[in-house]
Image 1 (tube, rainbow, N blue to C red):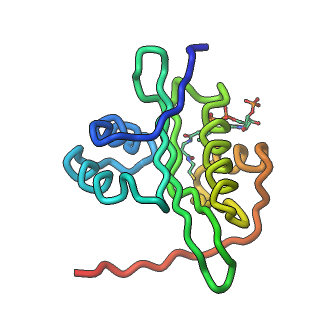
Image 2: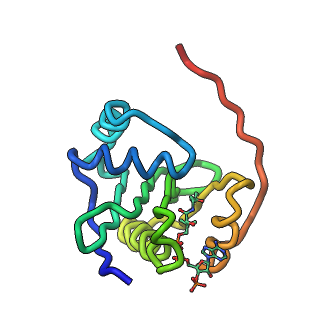
Image 3: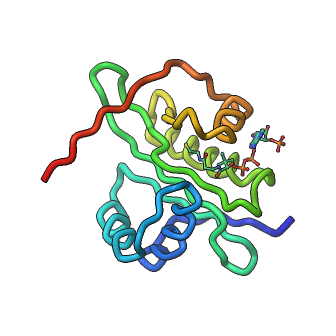
Length: 146
Ligand SMILES: CC(C)(COP(=O)(O)OP(=O)(O)OC[C@H]1O[C@@H](n2cnc3c(N)ncnc32)[C@H](O)[C@@H]1OP(=O)(O)O)[C@@H](O)C(=O)NCCC(=O)NCCS
């Protein structure tokens, strides 16, 4: 198994992030991803971590957001996680989530949460295996703002 390193994302990572996002089922143009990345890069309440192999090829990423709610307190939510297909089951997903947990601890967040589509079968084996409990099932409502 290749040596994997984790690092925080940079401006120049948009293309690699976009390529991996398509794995997640969210195909996106690099320019669109660049704009999304630049909007949250460097913000204190946002974490963007890239996993790279020994050739500095991106093989996974995680994004997380820290925020407070009156109902549930201050928490970190994993807002995106993907590991490229050929690198799965080598512990990269676990390492990325552990990085988010360390960040959450450093911010004194009360919990790390993640919402995962019921159709993502790998993720429903993954999260329980690394200590996460399925606490509820919700519907997602959306309204585009023009
Ligand atoms: C879910 C995902 C991120 C897991 O990444 P990964 O690097 O393969 O996960 P790890 O190797 O760290 O797995 C840790 C443990 O989780 C469990 N696990 C992970 N994937 C599994 C699978 N497909 N089937 C069964 N168990 C699985 C295992 O117990 C594994 O430990 P083991 O390999 O020693 O048995 C990856 O499958 C993925 O990118 N899937 C598509 C996108 C996705 O579902 N993202 C989550 C959206 S919230």
